[in-house]
Image (cartoon, rainbow, N blue to C red; front, side):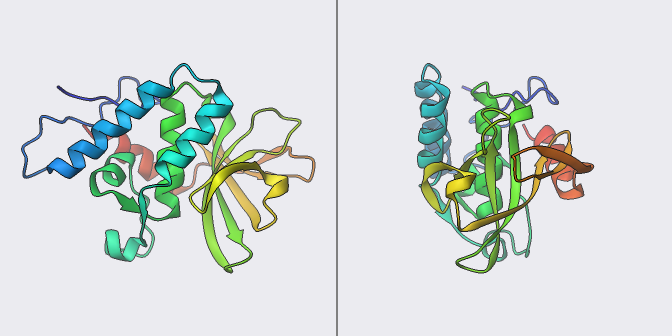
Length: 200
């Protein structure tokens, strides 16, 4: 039976997984991982949004973290949800991306979701997380592969956010949590969306 994912408004009826693919293309471990993912989504559909955020963050954080140079033989590659679930591991960008599309699938508004580049102060490294703006008056909630807790940005003293990205463009945040558009969709995100749209 085919499985379907990610009906973001930009790509209606987007098909991303077909479990009838030949075994050589999708091994049993990958199939089981994908089936468990969809079963988990089904089990979360009736929960309140706040509970969905916490459970999705916890569930996807159990996937293995590995750098792009190991996974894709590249220094900076943004994997699609299909690629991430098929291989079962990725880096911080891959975690943020799959959480973005997963929450879209659960009905979250894309205007409130932002893939967010940041600086992780404790490690001194560039980092990527997913931000969810529950309301304009509050700091965004942060879904991070480095934390099983979903905390608002004011409590994430380790993060220095830089750019907030979604399908409408690139933004910066003010001290009062207001977003100001500073540019178009970054080329890497645009290319990612194109690859997601082509996958079936």
